[in-house]
Amino acid sequence: MNPATAHDVVILGGGLAGLCLALQLRQRFADLDIVVLERNTFPLPVAAHKVGESTVEIGANYFEKTLGLREHLDGAHIRKFGFRFFWSEGRRDVENVTELGVSVVLPTPTWQLDRGIFENHLAERVRAAGITLHAGAIARGVDFGTGDAHHEVRASMEGGDRVFAARWVVDASSRSSIIKRKLGLAEANGHDCNAVWFRIDTCLSMDEWITDARWQHR
Image (cartoon, rainbow, N blue to C red):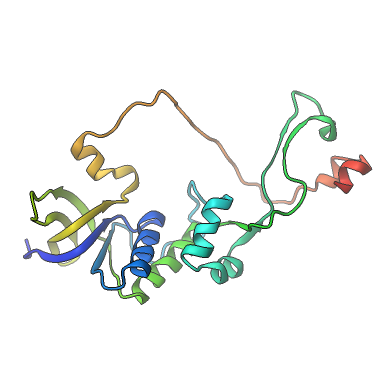
């Protein structure tokens, strides 16, 4: 085990949440010594589709305004035009079913993200900002300090096991939930939520489904 190195912040997980937080902390507190530990290696594969690839307005505003990623979002991802939901109840005349959504382009842009491209870009931005990003580093556990003592993060990485001491430890490890599991913070919420989605390799034209001129105009 290599001797512990001391830092201000150690972030467990260098996915979307961990990388965004690292960038935001650097923007707000320029002198912080920040370390990010990520089990995967970069670059991630293109078309790394995950939950969270479809942004909504509040998330897109964060990426664009807070992190300053508008140029990358416009250049590397697909602009969205808002959700519209249709409840067919078995009917085929789509123009007459219950509909929820907008009929105009909203002023706040949103994007459909390729998470591989997006997280690779975030990793480049993190490193360019002087933040230490260790890829291929697996966090094994956290030992909390008492009083003013630093917390210690144990990690396995190329070159052997290491210990990172920090004033703050942030758990962005997704399903690993290192701190949540350690402290027994998981709670059942009674809401078992699941989703199913699929992709098709062709275009669907709503014009071929709906002939009502008033609906088409709207």
